[in-house]
Amino acid sequence: MTLIGVFIILFLSSCKSIYRFEEDECSSEFILYRENFKYTEKTPFSDFHVWGRYVVKDSIVQLFYDKEDRLPYSFSKSNIITLSENLLSKTFSVKTIDARSNQPLIKAALALRDGQGEVIESGITDLSGIAQLPKNADAKSLEIHYIGYATQYIDYSYIVNHDIEIVLDEYKAGGRRSDGCLVTFLDLILEYKIDDSKKIKSLERNGVRFRKIN
Image 1 (cartoon, rainbow, N blue to C red):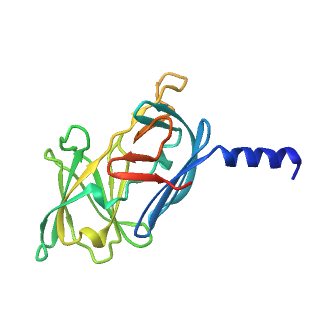
Image 2: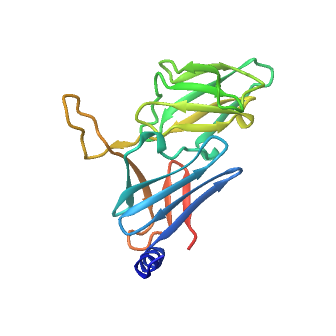
């Protein structure tokens, strides 16, 4: 490695802040550099990293992504409300709600996946934001997907004997647009609350808090 390469690595290392969130078998981490960030995630459902850019604005930090399939998954149990126990029922209900408006999300797609990630049961929420899914002993996770919102993955064993309510968080479209007849946004924005714009100690979004570790 050249002297310049060593200098660049040392320079970048000194200009980064690391924020981490861990829960059970899941961990995720943001590394913020001067203008860019690296996000890394390892859970039973995902294992990837992605780069992007960010902007700090007063009490929030905006992270710009250009890959929708590399958005952070929300896997914190704090987003889940257990409404009632249903030990004897062959089904369980899932109600999806918008985090900001507290309104039901209609036609959210739900899927139970087995240990290999294959869909074994699926459903769509109704006008009340509720879907009924059959219990399945082979299920390992529940996936909740709604266009324009961060995907949720939930450990099936945590919810199997309960009717639940889950809060989904919307993301924003970024400023760059594609060329051509169909105008589509190339960037997606996730906003995280911060405590201090000059010295960020944590990033928080929809109940998930990343704490500074360096």
